Length: 143
Image (cartoon, rainbow, N blue to C red; front, top):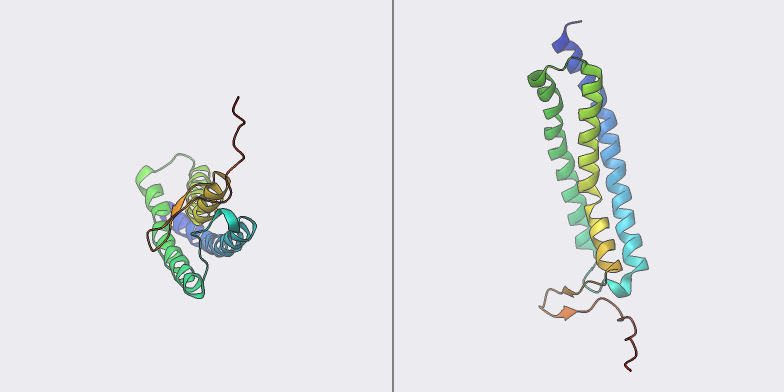
């Protein structure tokens, strides 16, 4: 098999795995956002999960998966441009980096909301009201 044909076969065979990883990660991310919201509801006064936000999130997730599949083509393109000495290792590294970057984007809402809850960050609602995130820790005694 020629190098270009082998490259296309390998990357095409990995696309299904990539998409399964993306879809499962999107579902897990959505579930984790609900968990963070439920556990830290008092610390996340501006996080509203409504029917609209769930539908909007699903649409954004599917658009993100479509965009990720367009970006997936950068794998075989990079292999063609770089012409690595060991294509197998190059493919694994590039594929792994692509998956890792996708996971970073997919789990960003979970990490952001969890960080806001743990650090008790204030937020501004849609009406411009600033909310302190949950009860403040007790003040230190003055002497």
